[in-house]
Image (cartoon, rainbow, N blue to C red; front, side, top):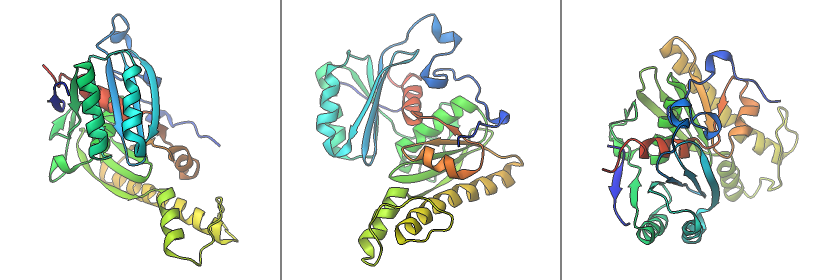
Length: 286
Protein backbone atom coordinates (compact mmCIF):
# COMPACT_ATOMS: atom_id res chain seq x y z
CA UNK A 1 0.00 0.00 0.00
CA UNK A 2 1.60 3.27 -1.07
CA UNK A 3 -0.29 5.62 1.25
CA UNK A 4 -3.79 6.65 2.18
CA UNK A 5 -5.80 7.15 -1.00
CA UNK A 6 -8.59 9.72 -0.92
CA UNK A 7 -10.80 10.55 -3.87
CA UNK A 8 -11.94 14.03 -4.81
CA UNK A 9 -10.55 15.41 -2.39
CA UNK A 10 35.21 24.23 -1.40
CA UNK A 11 33.09 21.72 -2.73
CA UNK A 12 34.03 18.06 -2.31
CA UNK A 13 33.64 15.35 -4.92
CA UNK A 14 31.85 12.30 -3.53
CA UNK A 15 34.04 9.26 -2.87
CA UNK A 16 33.63 6.54 -5.56
CA UNK A 17 31.99 4.08 -3.14
CA UNK A 18 29.18 6.56 -2.62
CA UNK A 19 28.13 6.87 -6.25
CA UNK A 20 24.49 6.05 -6.59
CA UNK A 21 23.02 3.19 -8.50
CA UNK A 22 20.45 4.07 -11.17
CA UNK A 23 17.09 4.93 -9.69
CA UNK A 24 14.19 2.90 -11.10
CA UNK A 25 11.93 5.93 -11.17
CA UNK A 26 14.14 9.00 -10.99
CA UNK A 27 17.80 9.28 -11.84
CA UNK A 28 20.10 12.17 -11.01
CA UNK A 29 18.48 15.53 -11.53
CA UNK A 30 15.08 13.88 -11.73
CA UNK A 31 15.79 12.34 -15.12
CA UNK A 32 14.43 8.88 -15.86
CA UNK A 33 16.48 5.76 -16.50
CA UNK A 34 16.38 3.65 -19.65
CA UNK A 35 13.20 1.79 -18.76
CA UNK A 36 11.26 5.05 -18.51
CA UNK A 37 12.56 6.77 -21.65
CA UNK A 38 10.21 5.07 -24.06
CA UNK A 39 6.99 6.20 -22.43
CA UNK A 40 5.72 8.68 -19.94
CA UNK A 41 3.75 7.68 -16.91
CA UNK A 42 0.77 9.43 -15.35
CA UNK A 43 1.28 13.01 -14.24
CA UNK A 44 1.91 13.14 -10.49
CA UNK A 45 1.82 16.37 -8.50
CA UNK A 46 4.03 15.84 -5.44
CA UNK A 47 3.62 18.29 -2.56
CA UNK A 48 5.81 18.47 0.55
CA UNK A 49 4.31 20.76 3.21
CA UNK A 50 7.04 21.39 5.78
CA UNK A 51 7.32 23.55 8.87
CA UNK A 52 8.28 26.72 7.01
CA UNK A 53 8.11 25.92 3.27
CA UNK A 54 5.77 24.11 0.91
CA UNK A 55 7.60 22.53 -2.03
CA UNK A 56 5.96 20.96 -5.04
CA UNK A 57 6.85 19.32 -8.32
CA UNK A 58 4.92 17.99 -11.32
CA UNK A 59 6.42 14.73 -12.59
CA UNK A 60 5.56 12.75 -15.71
CA UNK A 61 7.40 9.49 -14.95
CA UNK A 62 10.48 10.76 -16.78
CA UNK A 63 11.32 14.15 -15.35
CA UNK A 64 10.12 17.16 -13.42
CA UNK A 65 7.97 19.35 -15.66
CA UNK A 66 7.54 22.19 -13.15
CA UNK A 67 8.67 22.90 -9.60
CA UNK A 68 8.17 25.61 -7.03
CA UNK A 69 7.81 26.54 -3.38
CA UNK A 70 6.18 29.03 -1.05
CA UNK A 71 5.79 29.89 2.60
CA UNK A 72 3.82 27.47 4.75
CA UNK A 73 2.26 30.48 6.48
CA UNK A 74 0.49 31.17 3.17
CA UNK A 75 -0.50 27.55 2.53
CA UNK A 76 -3.93 28.35 1.09
CA UNK A 77 -2.50 30.79 -1.46
CA UNK A 78 0.50 28.64 -2.41
CA UNK A 79 -1.56 25.48 -2.94
CA UNK A 80 -4.44 27.34 -4.57
CA UNK A 81 -2.11 28.64 -7.27
CA UNK A 82 -1.29 25.06 -8.30
CA UNK A 83 -4.70 24.91 -9.99
CA UNK A 84 -3.03 26.72 -12.90
CA UNK A 85 -0.91 23.62 -13.64
CA UNK A 86 -1.87 20.90 -16.08
CA UNK A 87 -4.34 18.57 -14.40
CA UNK A 88 -2.40 15.62 -12.93
CA UNK A 89 -3.58 12.03 -12.68
CA UNK A 90 -3.06 12.10 -8.93
CA UNK A 91 -1.76 14.32 -6.16
CA UNK A 92 0.63 12.89 -3.56
CA UNK A 93 0.96 14.88 -0.36
CA UNK A 94 3.36 14.77 2.59
CA UNK A 95 2.13 17.04 5.36
CA UNK A 96 3.78 18.06 8.61
CA UNK A 97 2.41 21.62 8.32
CA UNK A 98 -1.01 21.07 9.81
CA UNK A 99 -4.72 21.20 8.89
CA UNK A 100 -4.70 24.38 6.77
CA UNK A 101 -2.39 22.83 4.17
CA UNK A 102 -4.38 19.58 4.26
CA UNK A 103 -7.66 21.37 3.61
CA UNK A 104 -6.16 23.40 0.75
CA UNK A 105 -4.89 20.23 -0.95
CA UNK A 106 -8.28 18.54 -0.55
CA UNK A 107 -9.97 21.53 -2.19
CA UNK A 108 -7.49 21.37 -5.06
CA UNK A 109 -8.12 17.66 -5.63
CA UNK A 110 -11.86 18.21 -5.49
CA UNK A 111 -11.60 20.96 -8.10
CA UNK A 112 -9.62 18.66 -10.39
CA UNK A 113 -11.60 15.49 -9.47
CA UNK A 114 -8.36 13.57 -8.99
CA UNK A 115 -7.13 11.10 -6.40
CA UNK A 116 -5.26 12.34 -3.34
CA UNK A 117 -2.56 10.07 -1.93
CA UNK A 118 -1.67 11.14 1.58
CA UNK A 119 1.82 9.88 2.45
CA UNK A 120 1.52 7.81 5.61
CA UNK A 121 4.57 5.83 6.81
CA UNK A 122 3.99 2.08 6.61
CA UNK A 123 5.70 -0.88 8.25
CA UNK A 124 7.15 -1.77 4.82
CA UNK A 125 7.08 0.28 1.63
CA UNK A 126 9.17 0.70 -1.52
CA UNK A 127 11.83 -1.69 -0.23
CA UNK A 128 12.24 0.08 3.14
CA UNK A 129 11.27 -1.48 6.48
CA UNK A 130 10.12 1.00 9.11
CA UNK A 131 11.73 0.31 12.48
CA UNK A 132 9.79 2.96 14.43
CA UNK A 133 7.94 1.60 17.46
CA UNK A 134 4.74 3.06 15.95
CA UNK A 135 5.38 3.45 12.18
CA UNK A 136 2.60 6.03 11.78
CA UNK A 137 4.28 8.39 14.26
CA UNK A 138 7.26 8.84 11.93
CA UNK A 139 7.13 12.11 9.99
CA UNK A 140 5.95 11.58 6.43
CA UNK A 141 8.75 13.79 5.09
CA UNK A 142 11.39 11.67 6.86
CA UNK A 143 9.80 8.51 5.45
CA UNK A 144 9.71 9.86 1.90
CA UNK A 145 13.35 10.98 2.16
CA UNK A 146 14.43 7.50 3.26
CA UNK A 147 12.47 5.87 0.44
CA UNK A 148 14.16 8.14 -2.10
CA UNK A 149 17.63 7.57 -0.63
CA UNK A 150 17.16 3.79 -0.69
CA UNK A 151 15.95 3.92 -4.31
CA UNK A 152 18.95 6.01 -5.32
CA UNK A 153 21.72 4.22 -3.48
CA UNK A 154 20.45 0.78 -2.47
CA UNK A 155 22.89 0.55 0.43
CA UNK A 156 23.31 1.79 3.98
CA UNK A 157 22.56 5.51 4.22
CA UNK A 158 22.49 8.23 6.81
CA UNK A 159 19.70 10.45 5.50
CA UNK A 160 20.16 14.01 6.78
CA UNK A 161 17.48 16.62 6.13
CA UNK A 162 18.67 20.00 7.38
CA UNK A 163 15.85 22.52 7.56
CA UNK A 164 13.90 24.14 10.39
CA UNK A 165 14.83 21.00 12.30
CA UNK A 166 17.61 18.62 11.31
CA UNK A 167 16.82 14.92 11.12
CA UNK A 168 19.42 12.19 10.66
CA UNK A 169 17.96 8.74 9.93
CA UNK A 170 19.82 5.46 9.56
CA UNK A 171 18.86 2.94 6.86
CA UNK A 172 20.98 -0.21 6.81
CA UNK A 173 22.17 -2.42 3.95
CA UNK A 174 18.90 -4.38 4.05
CA UNK A 175 16.72 -1.29 3.74
CA UNK A 176 15.78 -1.31 7.42
CA UNK A 177 15.25 2.03 9.11
CA UNK A 178 17.21 1.59 12.33
CA UNK A 179 16.32 4.88 14.00
CA UNK A 180 17.17 8.54 13.84
CA UNK A 181 17.48 11.84 15.67
CA UNK A 182 15.75 15.22 15.52
CA UNK A 183 17.55 18.40 16.60
CA UNK A 184 16.78 22.09 16.11
CA UNK A 185 18.08 23.42 12.81
CA UNK A 186 20.73 26.09 12.52
CA UNK A 187 18.31 29.00 12.16
CA UNK A 188 16.11 27.74 14.98
CA UNK A 189 19.11 27.48 17.32
CA UNK A 190 20.11 31.06 16.54
CA UNK A 191 16.56 32.29 17.04
CA UNK A 192 16.15 30.46 20.35
CA UNK A 193 19.40 31.85 21.76
CA UNK A 194 18.55 35.38 20.68
CA UNK A 195 15.06 35.21 22.21
CA UNK A 196 16.12 33.56 25.46
CA UNK A 197 19.20 35.61 26.30
CA UNK A 198 19.20 39.40 26.10
CA UNK A 199 22.96 39.39 26.67
CA UNK A 200 23.66 37.77 23.32
CA UNK A 201 24.46 39.96 20.32
CA UNK A 202 21.64 39.74 17.80
CA UNK A 203 23.91 40.65 14.91
CA UNK A 204 24.47 38.35 11.93
CA UNK A 205 27.43 36.10 12.55
CA UNK A 206 29.69 34.04 10.32
CA UNK A 207 31.60 30.83 10.81
CA UNK A 208 34.96 31.01 12.55
CA UNK A 209 36.86 28.23 14.30
CA UNK A 210 38.13 30.86 16.75
CA UNK A 211 35.22 33.32 17.15
CA UNK A 212 36.15 36.65 18.67
CA UNK A 213 32.69 38.20 18.91
CA UNK A 214 29.36 36.97 20.22
CA UNK A 215 27.54 36.82 16.89
CA UNK A 216 30.24 34.62 15.35
CA UNK A 217 30.41 32.50 18.50
CA UNK A 218 26.68 31.75 18.37
CA UNK A 219 26.66 31.13 14.61
CA UNK A 220 29.70 28.84 14.74
CA UNK A 221 28.57 26.97 17.83
CA UNK A 222 25.15 26.18 16.35
CA UNK A 223 26.68 24.97 13.09
CA UNK A 224 29.29 22.80 14.82
CA UNK A 225 26.56 21.27 17.00
CA UNK A 226 24.83 20.01 13.82
CA UNK A 227 28.09 18.87 12.25
CA UNK A 228 29.03 17.05 15.45
CA UNK A 229 25.65 15.29 15.60
CA UNK A 230 26.04 14.02 12.04
CA UNK A 231 29.64 12.91 12.60
CA UNK A 232 28.63 11.06 15.77
CA UNK A 233 25.84 9.26 13.91
CA UNK A 234 28.22 8.34 11.08
CA UNK A 235 30.82 6.99 13.53
CA UNK A 236 28.29 4.87 15.42
CA UNK A 237 26.58 3.58 12.27
CA UNK A 238 29.97 2.79 10.68
CA UNK A 239 30.94 0.79 13.76
CA UNK A 240 27.74 -1.24 13.57
CA UNK A 241 27.97 -1.80 9.80
CA UNK A 242 31.70 -2.32 9.46
CA UNK A 243 31.77 0.25 6.64
CA UNK A 244 30.73 3.92 6.50
CA UNK A 245 27.22 4.66 5.22
CA UNK A 246 26.43 6.96 2.33
CA UNK A 247 25.71 10.38 3.79
CA UNK A 248 22.72 11.85 1.95
CA UNK A 249 22.13 15.56 2.54
CA UNK A 250 18.93 17.45 1.74
CA UNK A 251 17.12 20.54 2.97
CA UNK A 252 17.78 24.25 2.93
CA UNK A 253 20.97 24.03 5.02
CA UNK A 254 22.43 21.00 3.22
CA UNK A 255 25.14 23.02 1.45
CA UNK A 256 26.10 24.81 4.67
CA UNK A 257 26.38 21.49 6.46
CA UNK A 258 28.44 19.82 3.74
CA UNK A 259 30.89 22.73 3.63
CA UNK A 260 31.91 21.95 7.23
CA UNK A 261 31.29 18.20 7.48
CA UNK A 262 34.71 17.10 6.14
CA UNK A 263 33.22 13.77 5.04
CA UNK A 264 32.16 12.56 1.58
CA UNK A 265 28.45 13.22 1.10
CA UNK A 266 25.79 13.27 -1.60
CA UNK A 267 23.48 16.27 -1.88
CA UNK A 268 20.03 15.59 -3.35
CA UNK A 269 18.07 18.78 -3.80
CA UNK A 270 14.54 17.38 -4.05
CA UNK A 271 14.92 14.23 -1.97
CA UNK A 272 11.53 14.34 -0.23
CA UNK A 273 9.66 15.09 -3.47
CA UNK A 274 11.45 12.17 -5.15
CA UNK A 275 10.32 9.88 -2.35
CA UNK A 276 6.75 11.13 -2.64
CA UNK A 277 6.73 10.30 -6.37
CA UNK A 278 8.24 6.87 -5.70
CA UNK A 279 5.50 6.06 -3.19
CA UNK A 280 2.72 7.44 -5.39
CA UNK A 281 3.99 5.37 -8.33
CA UNK A 282 3.81 2.08 -6.43
CA UNK A 283 0.09 1.68 -7.00
CA UNK A 284 -1.34 3.41 -3.97
CA UNK A 285 -4.65 3.84 -5.77
CA UNK A 286 -6.42 1.16 -7.80
